[in-house]
Image (cartoon, rainbow, N blue to C red):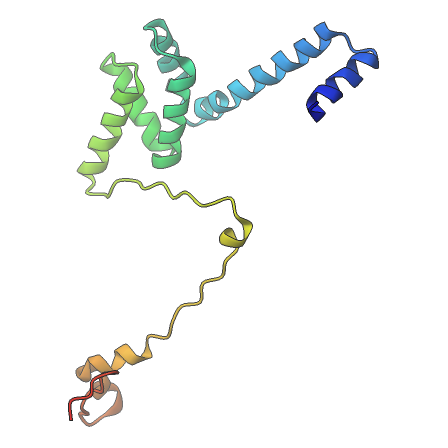
Length: 164
């Protein structure tokens, strides 16, 4: 039997009713659902109206929230707020409309698309220290910069070049 089941049985024996436990579970589920919505509504106030209109049109609120939160992470609060406002003005309350506005605005600024970087959960990988290699050997490839620094012109020495 799992530890979770044992914990629930212990709580039931200790006087908590199953109705009380169910109320706690429901409360925690509602709190978890609203955390993304609260973050989104603080960053982009128009997201509340967009979510309401999207739900009225039959779209799933969890999916809409998830997509908009991802766009918030990728583009930032200011850009997302402008894109949501424009999507609402165009009467297109859906995350795809918001994404199209964000992409159009990004292209107008000649910026590259945002890239998500996924790091593994491995603590060794997250805390790895990468020491850069010395680039001193590349200084010898440009004789003009070396001549300017050292005075008289010298012949560059390329590592691994053995033309005698």
